[in-house]
Length: 162
Length: 126
Image (cartoon, rainbow over all chains, first blue to last red; front, top):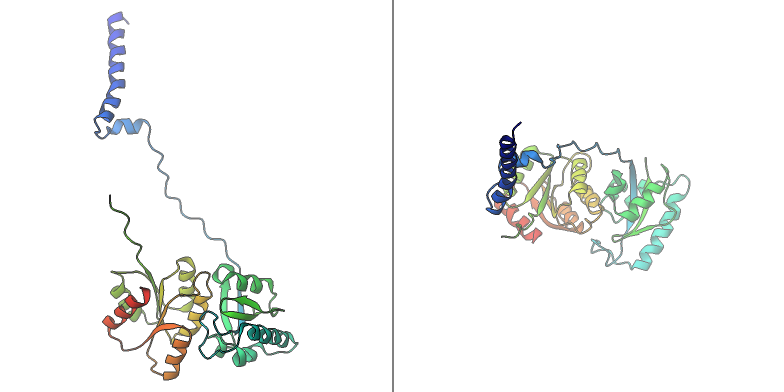
């Protein structure tokens, strides 16, 4: 290779190097080749991993509401203390062997599920307010909470059905 | 540069009659983000993923009815104050009272005027 050819090649290489910054400073779109030299990593759309099968349980409850509790029926006049005492009494009654939880719910619950024996159907842990979910998931099937569980709605006595 | 558009309010429509669910969905989708469920189980699954700002519930549904669903929706984390509108063919006064007792904003009996539903939805999500 002779000297003049080498010089020409060096100069040409220099020119090529200078073109890119010039285009940038003019605020023109970069030619495709510049991008192609260092392609931005475009993450391929990966399908979301299938959600882990969440444990689901079936439970019923008896709600003892009080005046001032969230969504309390206007007919409810008992105080919070009275509601707590009543719920504690019912929890003991519901835990007795042979107790009919559904019947107790029908007679005593202030929840809209009362006519269905307090049945709330199936739910996962994240599908229920925390204090309720924590208490219900700690139970074994057939068990009733030993003490009422408090939420904004009042005091709940919970039975895990399945 | 303009700021992002305000988030569209999310309405959950639950009716076991697909025609009514679709009709309501179409009527509301221009102004709201609409989710439609044909039964309580689907409604709960949707609401636990995307919290609605209002639920429009049919009362008479097989399995868990609208009142039962209302109770379950309100027991979802963060939804204790979810506004509800009941929509039903039942004109029974006792049902209307029950609807109001579970904290419904409105109780609309079928057949309804679509404009009436839209107006009530608008007021309820304000």
